[in-house]
Length: 338
Image 1 (tube, rainbow, N blue to C red):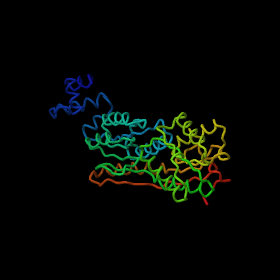
Image 2 (tube, one colour):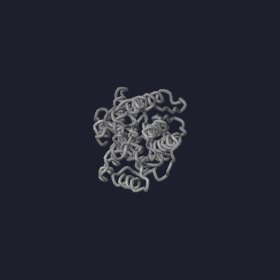
Image 3 (cartoon, rainbow, N blue to C red):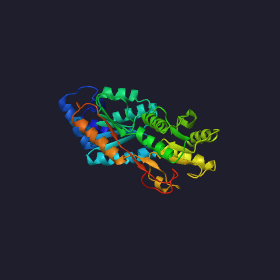
Image 4 (spheres, helix red, strand yellow):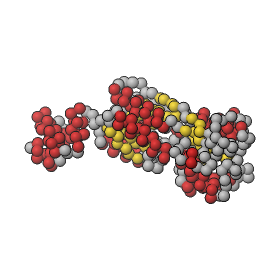
């Protein structure tokens, strides 16, 4: 900043006022500061462009990308489509925590992003309040709230019926004690998948036994060990389990192995969230596969449309996932479901 002030022949305070828009300065002074920013390369050309045009050509992305393999794949899709549209992507990891989410949003907004894509936490209210005050075009991805605010769109997948179909399949194979394990009970995805599980149990004439529903606050190995132990130690343990997401699947399979159980010989499993190495597991995992590329590309398209017309009514879009039928459910071979 000192170099900019020297080249523009103004004080560092004046440069700060121009960059942060904290006080109005004379047009000729502002022009001198902008020229000095470009000449010195201060903070890149992005700040100068932002001051001239009101846009930084950057999009902020806030999600738990490091800890969740599914989100890692989604980031690649979003980044590819953002770049194709001529924008840059700034990523902040929320760790699926409301406090960290608020901090991540604050950091992204401090970089003057033009718009935001957010996979909201279980308590997104404070984050949405901040976005509303700044009037930042926003797309919520994966976790879709029941009601949308002005200037906010949302896109995710259908969660309930696909999960119910996993229960249907187990019932058709003769299972009557079908459990489910999931995590983060307040996320909309968890709520919807649990409702799908219950729907599948009811329509197959099976009891929705609360002991067969394990919902934890996380998917750590310790949490999954507790969940598996709770199920296997029942007087009538389950013979099949519907896993709520890929993290749960990985943790629970490890816990089953530590108990000396073999899938699907001793217990059958199927999961929501396919992932790259699910086809390499032994046995290969029967899984609900989310259309990650379509989620990423459509989220970016929705955001660009809102940047072009901020008066668009809030949109709520759901994509259909597909079922990848493999062997972990206990079928002899993969293929279309019966």
